[in-house]
Amino acid sequence: MGRFLTIIIVAILLIGGGIFYWRYFWVFGEGVKSGELNYVVRKGYIFKTYEGKLIQSGFKGGMAGSIQSYEFEFSVGDKRIAEELMTNSGKEFELHYKEYLGALPWRGNTKYVVDSILSMKGDPGDKQISPRQ
Image 1 (cartoon, rainbow, N blue to C red):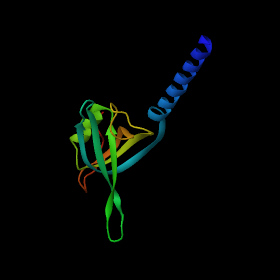
Image 2 (cartoon, helix red, strand yellow; image 1 turned 120 degrees about the horizontal axis):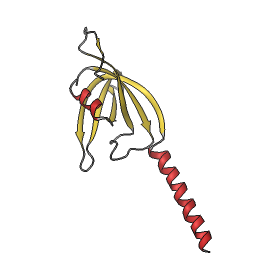
Image 3 (cartoon, rainbow, N blue to C red; image 1 turned 180 degrees about the vertical axis):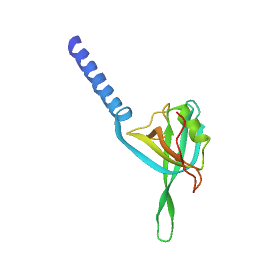
Image 4 (cartoon, rainbow, N blue to C red; image 1 turned 120 degrees about the vertical axis):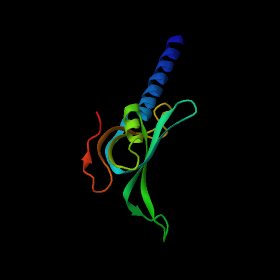
């Protein structure tokens, strides 16, 4: 009976661990979003994370007669990238992100985590600026 119970407990732990990994650590998708950086802030009660919003070009209508812009809300895992974004708010960015199936409190409030800046443009008419490495 003791051996059977041990096997059941180990099986439950392995299955639970696999589901936890799949939900919170397996990368569901990767991509690039571009648009004007609205803000990046550091916030949280226990885990301080960097959260931001990118306003994408184009419009969509939610209800008849209404217009809304596309917004991409994201978390930033790297402090260096977050500081680069914070000092350049309002500029056009191309951001590479990873999408997870769930958010972890120490990784951020969203399931989208920006891991690199591909390009940054200043005001309209300015030439493209390469981000600091």
